[in-house]
Image (cartoon, rainbow, N blue to C red):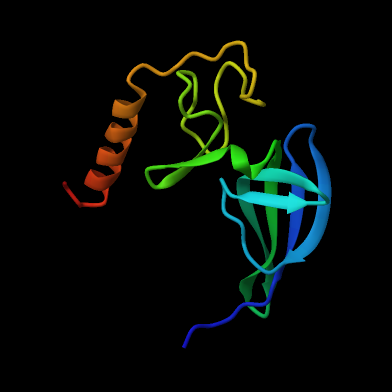
Length: 141
């Protein structure tokens, strides 16, 4: 029988500028790379930390701390292989990351970026990523 855990107190901290945004109970436990909508703003979860409390001779999880950064919107994310990537995946400078868009313009947005450069062999790059993901999971095509 699956054990159901009650919602935990979750502290939301913005990475830059560093400040506490909120402290609330969420019905789910966001993982790094997921998007979180809070007070009309979209944030990307960068890191998740656990806070424990020593109670009755053992440690119990009492709070989750999420380190987040502002995102333009979750519509800027694309599924590449088995992971989410933010920014324009057809750009040569895209970091292929769910946390950072690129080295040139990490805070975005990608739309209208003067440094945009089409990725060389964009389709073959996506194919290599898919092949690597299949090989990692043990499925070879």
